[in-house]
Image 1 (cartoon, one colour):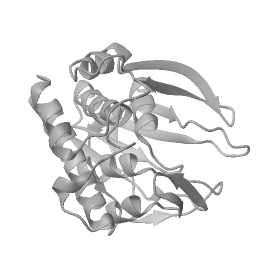
Image 2 (cartoon, one colour; image 1 turned 135 degrees about the vertical axis):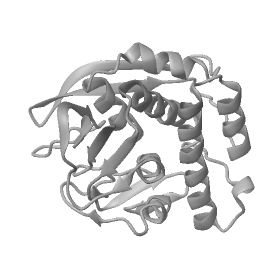
Image 3 (cartoon, rainbow, N blue to C red; image 1 turned 180 degrees about the vertical axis):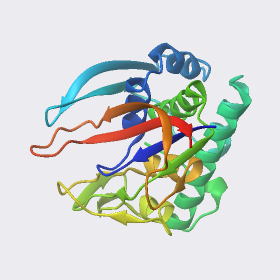
Image 4 (cartoon, rainbow, N blue to C red; image 1 turned 135 degrees about the horizontal axis):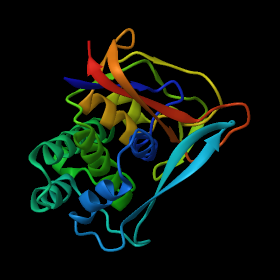
Amino acid sequence: MTAAYVDAASGVSGDMFLGALVDAGVDPGVLQRAVDRLGVDGLRLTAVTTRRNGVAATKVDVTYPVQDEVRGLREVLAIIVASGLAPDVAAAATSVFRRLAAAEAVVHGVSVDEVHFHEVGAADALADVVGTAAGLHELGVTRLFVGSVNVGSGTVACEHGVLPVPAPATAKLLEGWRTHVAGPARELTTPTGAALLTALGRQVAAPPRLRGLTRGRGAGRSDPPGWANLLRLVVGEAA
C-alpha cells in the first residue's frame, strides 16, 4: 500500500500541495492534462524550482482568466462530472468541494446550495483541488496521513473584510484536528488547503513508518525572512 505523510508545520494551501507533488516526482504535464479536462480556457500550471529560507522546493503557479466567474457547488460538481477524469480523481475532488461547501454554509448560515465559492470556487481552486487529486493518483497514494497543522496568526483580508486567522471556514474545517501556531503572523493554512487535508487525509500523532521514501517540498507564495514556508510530503510503502 502506497501512503503519504503531509508535514504541515508551515501550513498548507492548494498551490503548496501541487508543488510538493511535483517535487516528489509527478510530471507537471500530468497535472496540466487533468486541469485541461475541466474545460476552463486559459487555466495553466507552471512549475518552477525556487527556495524558501534557503531550502530548495518547487513552486506551482496557477494562471487563469482574470474575470473567472463565481460558481456554486452544483456548478463545480457538474464541471468535475463532465470532465472525464479518472473515477478516483473525480471522487476525491468532489469530496473536497463538498466538505468546503459544508464549512462555508455553516459559517455564513446558509444552505449548501446557496454557497458561492467566490475566490475559493474560481479557476485556481479547481486547479488546486483537481491537480492535487490527480497527483496523488499518479503516485499511487491510497492513504494520506497528516501531522499537526500550523494555521498561522494575525489577520487575513478576504471578500468579507479583514478577519482573524484562521479564517472562519478554515477553523470550521479543522474542528477536531490538532493545530498549532508558529512562525510569521499571517495566514498559513487556507480554506482550500484545510479542505484537501481533512477530506482526503487522516490525522496521526506521529509520522507513519514508510519504506522506499520519496520526498517533496512545495513552496508557498511568500518567502518571509527566517521561515521556510514549505509543505513537506513523504511518499512510500506502508510498513
